[in-house]
Length: 271
Image (cartoon, rainbow, N blue to C red; front, top):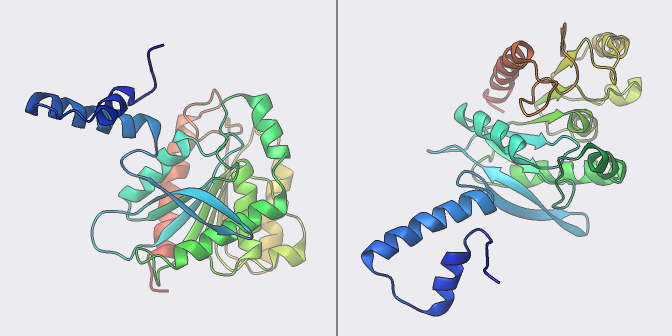
């Protein structure tokens, strides 16, 4: 049976020991570039691994071109897993001068099916997720490309809630961006947050009531925490994600601009 996997032609040539002509060599190089783009982490991101407890976990890592070190942002994916959309948002942050580490909390599993995504999220132990993210912060802290620079976290949906929990659990964070994530209510836990927080929510999000958002904001203010909350009318859940039916262009454009400005203000200053 013919091998139709991406890069199969390149692999067959490599296994044959044949020497290419200049013309075929150019074709093979082009094919290899295509293979890397469609089958791996792409040209921008590379796969890295590091320890989380007794496990080795993977993430997608990228840093801007030029001389570093750079401020860094930990990305926490939605319930779909570490998919191309998350890496796309990472690439946008790269253009603004941030190094990016997108953590794979599902150990390689990605889905576009809501039922499977729900099961994957339910099967993710909360303590393991926070352990993985804390290990990611420590990993980035040791990289030359981000050494002695500030680190922030950004998450969406499931990842938004986990971003806040990471801020509660890890003191080496300088900014936290929450997109429509679940909100902790325990005052003692919220009092542990060491960094400014900005949150973006949709007024029509049936999973996160506006009352919960305003109560979170009020509690944070009472605790003298730096918090900014933006609620978008006529926007529901996942309004930033243009691959979803709930995408809201106006809310997405405005919130992303605010998020990048927030990260720049709090991460690009001296540590």
